[in-house]
Picture 1 (cartoon, rainbow, N blue to C red):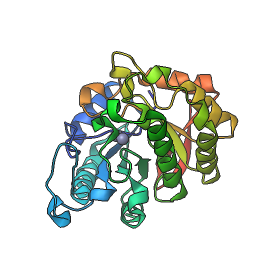
Picture 2 (tube, rainbow, N blue to C red):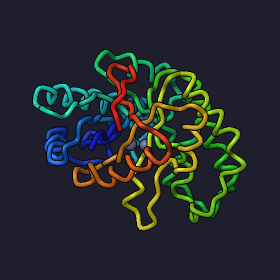
Picture 3 (cartoon, helix red, strand yellow):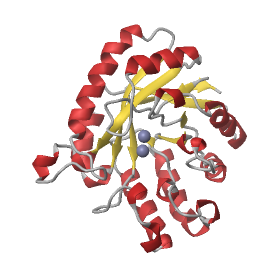
Picture 4 (tube, protein in one colour):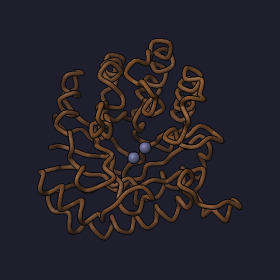
Length: 275
Ligand SMILES: [Zn+2]
Ligand SMILES: [Zn+2]
């Protein structure tokens, strides 16, 4: 298998296992490129006390600490990575809420790539924690894509993380009609393309009883037809046993959408590898 450019280790508050354990699994699966991208929720970059708050399940703080501990472990593992090209990254959540802090990580000379993700709308918890019975769903989804649009206007990211995350936990996601949002989604894609950045095929939903991929094939084809050629694939693994789960399906989907190459990043420079 070619790549998995979005993975979390025990440094992320919701994930387990070390970089060494990931490398062992990557070797066993013949993976060629692997990025470790632990969570940095940029709107909570400092420990909770800094904000006069307490850490809860909904709100993790100390993104800077996570980043420093993660990067140190990645750097120590690079000499041991053998045939796997180990890339140093971070998944930054909510970049539009504090682009200056995000730039600190993006411009850190140790990072190869930054995934920019929207997990939360301003002042609200992660989409995972919302009570969808009480939400105006079309308004919520519109707000999600508007926030992604704000994200792609910034520059401190390389890969747009799991586009359609805002739909992930909808009670009936498969029935949700994206048609009203396609104009804004096209603008998001055009911005990604103009900036020579990438989107990802995120397969974390493949483990669910009703499996899904963020974004779906219709949207990936649309990105390709608009001229998008930078695409990464990932399982967003939070546990070593899922490191390569469904990767072949994601590669297959990329081919179906028209891609003949995938993209990886070396110090924020896009590089191609044949698909
Ligand atoms: Zn994410
Ligand atoms: Zn992630």
